[in-house]
Figure 1 (spheres, rainbow, N blue to C red):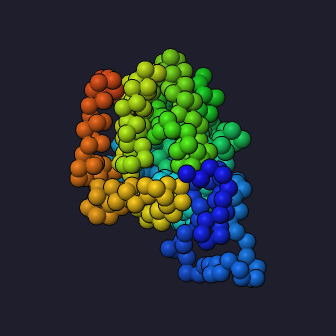
Figure 2: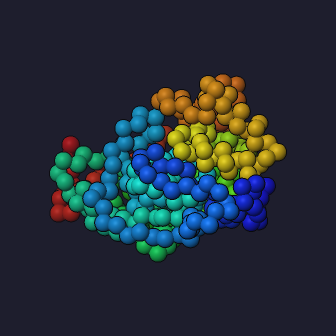
Figure 3: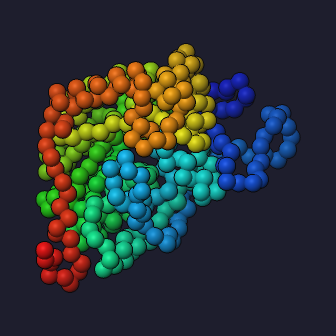
Length: 360
């Protein structure tokens, strides 16, 4: 596995600290530049691995989720693109709508919605809004490194707390602890539920698969501290990748339970759109000894392909390998009491400033 800067057979430098190692073609662009020969003398600049923040004034912040198998009704994302650089991230494909690539661009060009708190306030003030939980974030991680500078996630939570608007969250960054005070207050009103994503305890794997995320140990600390503060905490095992991290499922679920998690979820790897090319390139560069095996196991779990778009099947897979993962999850979920409680966010407390409360 490559953990130092090296050169592959094409002469390209392996970019440490980045998941994707290339910028695949954007299917929405008619014109593009390509580098045909390494020795060419043309004026050419390689994709810049340095992160840049592009501040934007968005037109909206809350989006309706139409997918029936993701467990959310609405989502809001203060950032587009994600510096975490997780190689498997499904959000990469959405970056093509912005005119960039789902590869290195996704990790280095972070769009910051500076007016997100104002947009959320305006949205919640709309008398047509009938309160249901909103997911933060449903796309890119709302606690990625940009949050330390911009604090947009905290401001969104402050607005939700003011309105008693319930929120479901998912992250893989222990930076969430900066907002412990606010999360604890919302938890006391049953307005918050959090999933922490843990995919591996293997640090060598994490450094190349999720290069700019916090360690699994830090994520367990996040679960422990917030659960002790009264926040409902869960663990997300996603995605499970056969031949890479699927054997860690029991260890992850056991550790999460011991640190205070009370519920769990998982997804099975699927490589839709441009992610197929990005993941394939990454897999063969980092794990040449087992790349063929991993790739074929993924194919065998999606009817001969590496992606399946059918609702209810796409994030679970099918066939013997996917079934083993499903059975393991079911077994350890019961063993470690990660589905022991039925718990729902409270929408009945929602109010707009100046209202006396809601009557039913």
